[in-house]
Image 1 (cartoon, rainbow, N blue to C red):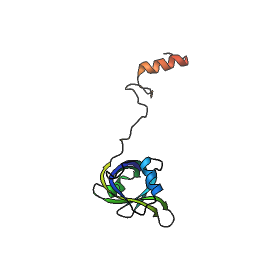
Image 2: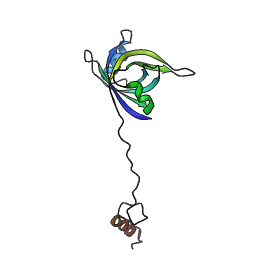
Image 3: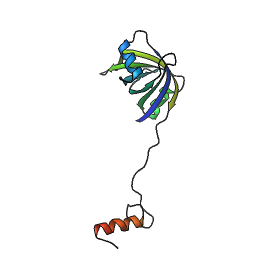
Image 4: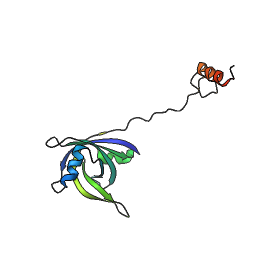
Length: 141
């Protein structure tokens, strides 16, 4: 699972509670559940909304690469305030409906594992660094 950012045009549902809509607009409410047009539910975090008439939203959602296709450009989706989870998952508290304008891919994974300098077995970046560490430990070469 990786964190994708979903950018979309949204329309708040007329029956959505005013307090919830206001919470998303002012950023005091961020948690939501996103339902793909395929009927799949994903926990998400609202990252920002522009008020109507612009009605644009940015939503962060964890997806596998296979499920990311559910949110390709021009796909419709629904935003729920919450979800009931059990044998079947379904949305509760309809907030908005939207159309994906762009799905931003996750940042590339960073490999921060130690490197082995060529010609040494030490997992320290370079011989000078190895020698400095050795001198601090009292085992200078």
